[in-house]
Length: 153
Image 1 (cartoon, rainbow, N blue to C red):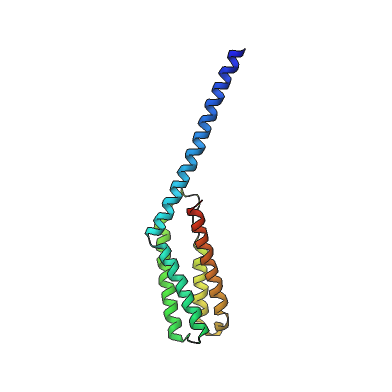
Image 2 (image 1 turned 180 degrees about the horizontal axis):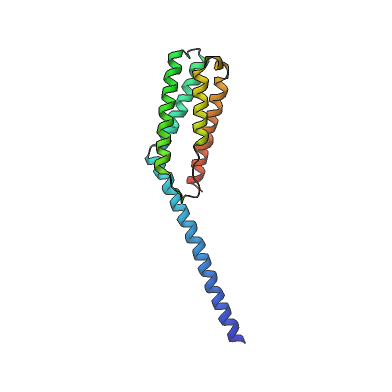
């Protein structure tokens, strides 16, 4: 009877070890894939694009507060935001990977850019430009926090 319990205990420990090894290796694999995802995002200059979008929002707010948001300036800002949105979309597609656990979601950034461009293109919405731009800047800040969280988790 004692020999039977030793055999069962030994098999139980082997199964426990295999399960633990599988869980640890799976966790390590997911962490490596996620880190590679973040590294590819940085290699594709994704953070630089996010910083440029943030700078464009800051320029918009500065020009709005100084009453320098002319029609030409609005058009330049709209063109720059369109280019940056296209660049971010290109980066998003190039780093797209199905086996990354924590993917970054850029959909709200695209939506915020669209709202800012819409507010800048319609002169009747000049009074809500700062609200929309501040909301968009908050979204960018949240995305940067998410990137930091994914990187150092």
